[in-house]
Image (cartoon, rainbow, N blue to C red):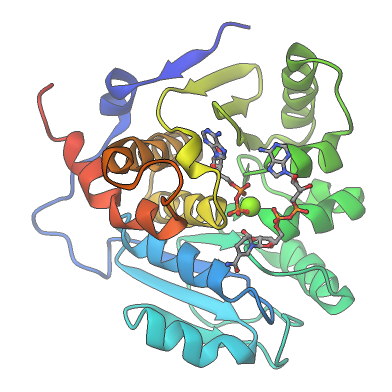
Length: 283
Ligand SMILES: NC(=O)C1=CN([C@@H]2O[C@H](COP(=O)(O)OP(=O)(O)OC[C@H]3O[C@@H](n4cnc5c(N)ncnc54)[C@H](O)[C@@H]3O)[C@@H](O)[C@H]2O)[C@@H](O)CC1
Ligand SMILES: Nc1ncnc2c1ncn2[C@@H]1O[C@H](COP(=O)(O)OP(=O)(O)O)[C@@H](O)[C@H]1O
Ligand SMILES: [Mg+2]
């Protein structure tokens, strides 16, 4: 039950430098599916974080009301819209992304739940599931069997509780999460302080990050980062490990300038570059 600590030594074993001759067409295409009226920001954060984590192309699939918001706030991101104005009701697209992140801001409308179910029945693309998409799964546990092995889920403690039930102690929480991971063959990013990643019987413990991350949207950013790494052909467990490590590192880097209070999710995104650069340093 001893965790493997996610530190720079572990990260350098899996980190892949960018090939000099790469181009956007082979650098990975990430699709972020989410958003609803009032929560388009979650998709903006997630899709910008995906781009800033190195994939070549990012597309956002959102309800119609988010079209101009996403196009204006992040012009580098391509946008596909649902037929509905305020929520997602039918997830269809003719692009071929290498990874999909679903859930930030998606809400729990009945039509969205049905659309998510239909999507899970046919999806074959590596997947990261977060936020309300996890809450929908909690209400429809039979759908968990539709998930492909090595699907990544990123619950915060409340979302985890909705999925696996209550626990009485930290060891029991880990034990129950291991059982859940083995039952559905999932990689579980148990967000918290610190974040643990559970892959069957293997437990990883992150060593970066601080309380500045306790701010709206920081989980949405993490989803974009992990989806981006998955799109860049990292193995799912390595995408989760590297994403969680870099996400925490942004807060460690920014803290001297922002303090705990004024750090916001956009500061995670602004510091992803410095976090990557620290992997190129010798120390
Ligand atoms: N700008 C935006 O558009 C934002 C959209 N968001 C979206 O809003 C939706 C709802 O997400 P929420 O997570 O707010 O709602 P949830 O109802 O899933 O979670 C909030 C509950 O979980 C508890 N909780 C959260 N973190 C915890 C922790 N570390 N330890 C113990 N309890 C904890 C809170 O106390 C609260 O009771 C999601 O779809 C999400 O993606 C949020 O990410 C915030 C920003
Ligand atoms: N006190 C803390 N110390 C370290 N990391 C934290 C702390 N509080 C929150 N985090 C991190 O911030 C992120 C919050 O994610 P989440 O709750 O999903 O936010 P949101 O839904 O608003 O985007 C997680 O990665 C979590 O590990
Ligand atoms: Mg969240």
